[in-house]
Length: 160
Image (cartoon, rainbow, N blue to C red; front, side, top):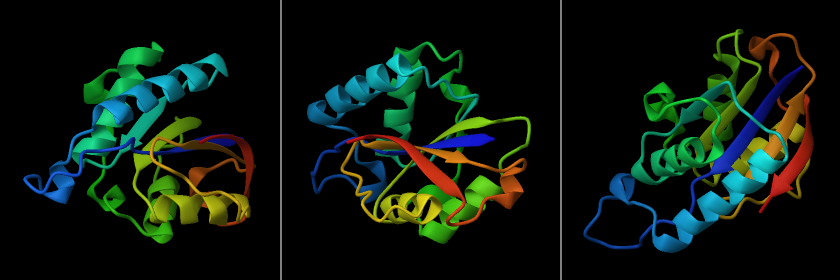
């Protein structure tokens, strides 16, 4: 069994002086990231790998999770993948299929619309729509990450 928790970056500033890639979280986003970190941690979810888009708002959301959760990972442990910046569902699927087998519980921080669509496709649950800061936990009944496919997962939890 493998577990993937897909997390949309928290709310970022909408300031035209930033390139989209470089937009940081605004205070509302920081607060939401902290709240959902507390909620994920209280449910007992502790990743052994964190993967993130390198865009500032996604990376900052992942770093807040690390600093607030006590998960035992450091910011330098985050695997940053450019393919997770504004991804398609297929980009996310490929990323999951490439995860090293020594990991069984992975948190992936990325962007919409691809993230919501990937969650829907993986879990075959079309009701999943992920606002900023949301997290969805999906159980995959697989032995190898390479076997990940759309429709093979089951939604366990959703934190809007």
